[in-house]
Length: 587
Image (cartoon, rainbow, N blue to C red; front, side, top):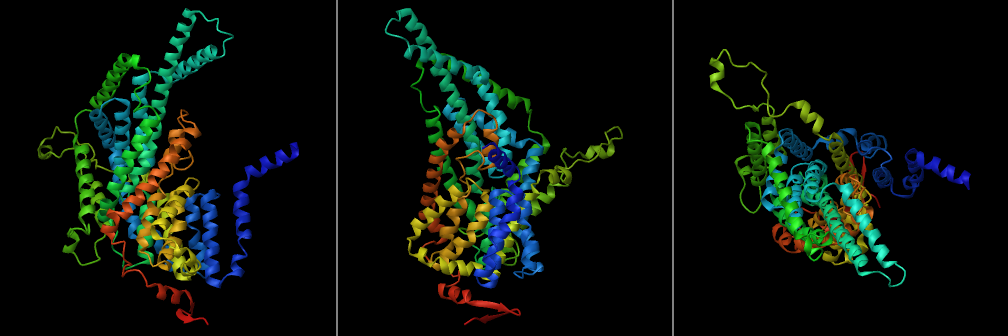
């Protein structure tokens, strides 16, 4: 038994290397059991899916596999694969990341967070709402991970002013529970009245400590959840949204329905509804809406809340008045959002009509604004400086330096996006997407609303164990073909699954924000599972509501669009093969 356990430990230590070496061998039958090109492409897709889900290789390294495997296996030439790694969608994402690094550089995000908390007050339920509103707003523009990392220290400072040191609070919980156990497990009914009163005092202390501990957990858990929810509201808020845009352009080049403005108009109400329901659930579960416990402690709580309010105001005061750099960043940030939203919002005429059709995309808008940050001054310009020989001749400092942007941008995510677009291109060119669509024909009998809800729930569960970007890269091509086979508007299935891939609430490993909150050491896995199950259900229901109400009106989801191929054409193309650069029918 000892030898077997030692062997298992050894195997566990080299599990990633074993996956890298064994997976290509296990998948080899695909190359011989399927049509040539489809089999080769499916081999690469499944290989990347396994590597992404197990993280046997770094995500970015797996994303680069199409560059070497597609050309060498005869699936796609290199000149078609490599450009997929820097499409205009990637530039839009890059411009969002650079804007976020400028906001972080000058601390504008901290000022926004403290200002919101000053407004909402320090009652636990309202503070949780303030935390969630702030985290969701910031994660629309910053990365979810950066938002969580910034908000958690603020939350901890407020909690310590409300409830004192966490370790002392834990000891109070334990001592109170011990006292309760003594009362419950006492022998006979020989307790004197003063003993019961003494134990009763401990029990009240325990209840108050447990109440405070629950509030503490609610604060910690609401921040990563709100960051994940907020990221869905903008195209640049999270990578899966951009994957959707890129794959729509790849599969349906004529589709111009989704852009920054139209997505924001659709996703913002969805985000706000889900955020409100999530707040009600978290506040109810962790005591923020429960005032029945320890009514006699209201005076003490009021004192603690005054202290917490003082901490927030003191932190805000330390920031000082808004300086020129912060005001400039705020201006460009608002300009960035407004220009992206108004370029072509679909429901009104946008400013893109002043340019040739199809020339100006969201990427152009984003890059123009962030380019200005690299030369716009961080200090207020002064004409008198030129005529004052005594004035300091310090170096000119722009709002953002390239070194700061280079250090802040997660280049691995940009490669991951590119890998997804390259995979989608390979699936399309090889005929794999159409081949899969043909085999999904039985699923076309499922009613579209039920199919959308089931797919959203499935992707939300799958993303608990895999990166949300990798998850949506794997499933979107299949979902697109399923929609064509079922004669359903592809957006009706692709939008909800894309949003659902960001609803990873149940496990610490599901998303980096969850991991950061869990790493504080104050949350248990069962806390996240208990809260996350209901959050996932609420998320799926909210997405279904959005798709079947204002989503139908905005994107005309009840009709099969002109930009999608007719079903019969799709079936014809699935029987075509490429030979010497030309399509020939294989009979």
